[in-house]
Length: 364
Image (tube, rainbow, N blue to C red; front, side, top):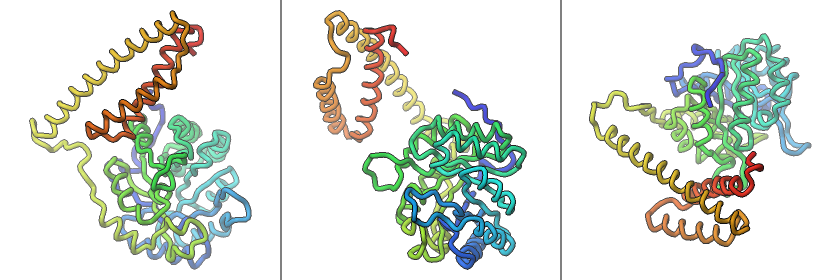
């Protein structure tokens, strides 16, 4: 799978991993907006001032944003500080109002990017506009849905396009508000290497104490920057108080981050890293060959089940396999959750292979 996204190459330097968007989860008052923007303007890394104007809340009768009035406050903040401004848009009406008030940058939120109809409405409203648009990952861990949202906007003529990783809602028990599932943004980057990708550690964490480690992780995965929620007094915030930090804390956090070499291109020939990579490559080939052998055995098992009128799925046998493999993994010092995930993928594929052997007409 390759990308057909037509991304402008001059709007964001992909070699720069210090593109920072910051500001409150919600614009709450003119005073709060201006106070935050003035403090953020003193932080050299901050490029864009963000504030939620329309807030998509799970239930009604909660704070759903100040609406259009907040756009005027953002205009004042831009005039006083010189910072660009950014807001989330969830429908065509939001787009029209944001552009009317001169908002510089738009982003599509996680709830909206999960709905192709909503994304298409926004894309249609943006036809003919020349504005950067960031797309947050959908709430559910679906890479194709994320790519589809980006494509819809791109097909509408938006070339200054970027993606924001903000984590995913899952039933898994984690220490995060939204599970990072780093493999998904990494796959997006592999799909579209020229697409700017930043991280929103505020929504992943749901807890300000986790922001520094998540931010460093994002930069270590070569993301191009961060969107961090910042409020002059987080304890009094009308939305998401636990994940927001004061501007001074943001400044210290950004100063603490390490920008590491992306590929080791300056290392000498024959250095330790090169040798370790060669060893890793050799092991990968061994794993692939083992996978091929395993699938051949799986097909033979499927043929045996067909000849003896047996079901494809044998739950008792599968439970025994998982228990045995996890025990072996633990003795080898491997992360058992990782091994379990690998075997779940193998088992799903094995069931499909055996089903095809038993009922070839059901292959699709």
